[in-house]
Amino acid sequence: MKLSREEVRHIALLARLGLNDDELEKFREQLSDILENFEILKQVDTTDVPPTRQPIALKNVVRGDEVAPSLPQEDILANAPREEEGCFRVRAVFE
Image (tube, rainbow, N blue to C red):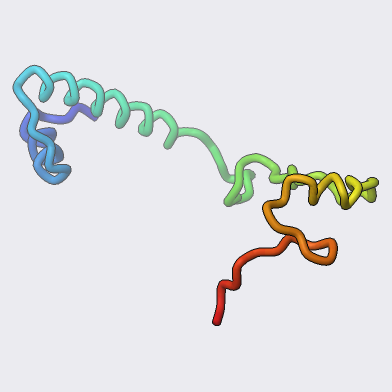
């Protein structure tokens, strides 16, 4: 399907694009090629293809939880600006 310059000008106006004559011709060719590709795709028989929302299988990429030894409490609190009773001491956020 070949688009006319006026159709491309109208599409550019709807998209709020300011195109000069060279750009208008360039996009006319490109958009026409895209529409021709869709015409070819319309000819593909899809009667036995079930509709899908996701073309590829989704899989969870999060690793599973595993029990592992943690760092000693002394090492964790070594760089804490304030420590109290084995915990980080922070300023109160709420009154």
